[in-house]
Structure formats: C-alpha cells, structure tokens
Length: 115
Image (cartoon, rainbow, N blue to C red; front, side, top):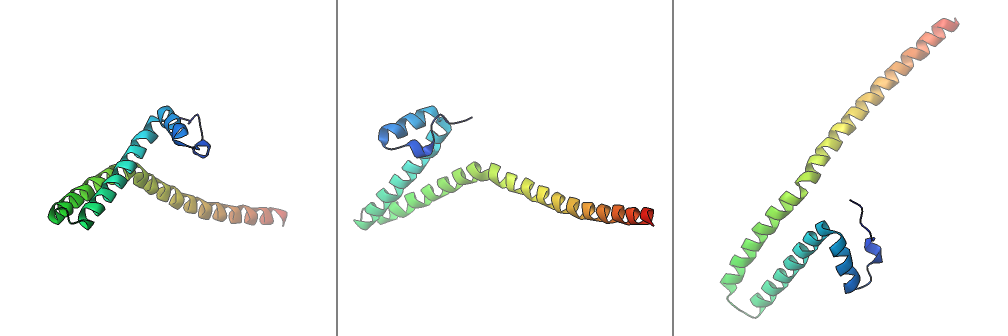
C-alpha cells in the first residue's frame, strides 16, 4: 500500500479530493477528523448561545464516548506494536550482554593460545 501522491503535494481542495480517492484508508480518518471537529464547534456554539445546555452536555458526553471508542480501536494495533518493540528491545539488550561475554571469553582464549 503505497500512496500515489505525497501529502506534501496537496495544495488545495481538488488535490485533497484526488488524494483521498486514491487512499481510501486516509478517507475514513479524514472524515472522522472533520466530523469530530464540526461536532465540537457546533456544540460549542450551541452552548454559547444557550441552546438547550443540558442537551449540549448530553451530546458532548456521547460524542466523547464514541470518539474514545474509535481511538481505542484505531490505536490498538499501535499499542500492540509497542509491546512487541519493548520485547525486541529487551531481547536486544540481552543479546548485547551475551555478545560481550562471548567476546571476552574469545579474547581470553586468544591470549591463552598466544602464551
């Protein structure tokens, strides 16, 4: 999955439209972002003008729960990847220690052979 255009090539709405048509996964993320931004702005304006403040609180809570669930599902792969990177890092440190011990032992045998 390699995008045909880079994000830096986007100069306007038409370029964004073409980019999103070529990359459907990015389309979902963009729609989610734009929808969330619009909902937050609409709720803020509604609350500021006094349009059913209790309803604004209720809708804001529901939107917060939905966006947190989306974020949890979206970043689950990254969190699992972090765990794997941590395991890899730990194994790499163990390997470095073992390699150091083996190098010392090889040097000791080399010195014993030279004597």
